[in-house]
Image (cartoon, rainbow, N blue to C red; front, top):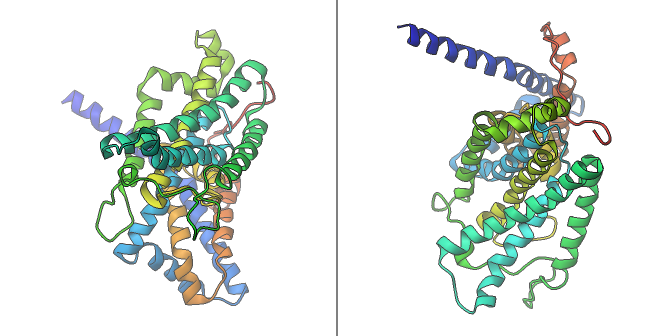
Length: 375
């Protein structure tokens, strides 16, 4: 009886903490929707019709749900990448480049490996290999920043931005050069199609949602388990909160910083790999522009919690997928969707505004996203 009471008490505490953590983001979304509605009225639109179109385009049919899940898949992976770095006290702005590196190497393994070997591979070897190589290359790309941070004090914000430029321009060079599809009808920068054995199957016939979506949900659970149930996760969180205290407690701070950045990059690289193997079946220049930067907003909105990241990814995916239907019904520009995302992020980041509007007392919480130069 006593153990049952303790279990019920623990369950209530967990539910209470989840509800408290999600209250501000939910109110931020509500406030952004209201402010966005006012702006729609100002520009001569009907907010009810606009938001109805947005919901219909995102969730109004089986196909709409499928497309929302397709959009959410890379958002979940990239959002988890940024959120994991946040937990370690690091600000990974390099998800865009890490995703591109993962995508280009997955495509390379997908179309070139059978040619190199001289024979076809079975799907249970070729597909995992293409995904793993892309994931590892994303991890290596981010791990370079981790090494620079750990051993030279180089700030990860500047380094990840610079690595983005290197990754995206190198990718452009490859897709316009040695990796370009040489088909007579092709005039754009993209790789050849990957082999059938490197393609991820669709979950349902006739819909584009693929098993990468299920993998994204599974990875979100694994990241939660890593952070909350393992020694490495404890070390990541401790270094993120106070590296000096972590070092005093015997944690290898440099190793943890490098591992955190590498794991973050692996998640971003996985986003690129899944887009190639599950959706596009090739890497095309510019296909992923914005995913890495949207991931920062998704991680912030989700409060760097894996469940929060999944929900925030669905919100962003729904807005992106429903934008076309909203524009069709109202003739409003799709740029309003970007404005709505910006408003949501604004109210989440400046939560003091939300607390003031709804008269919610602050508990003195402070989110530390990154430490200072050489910190």
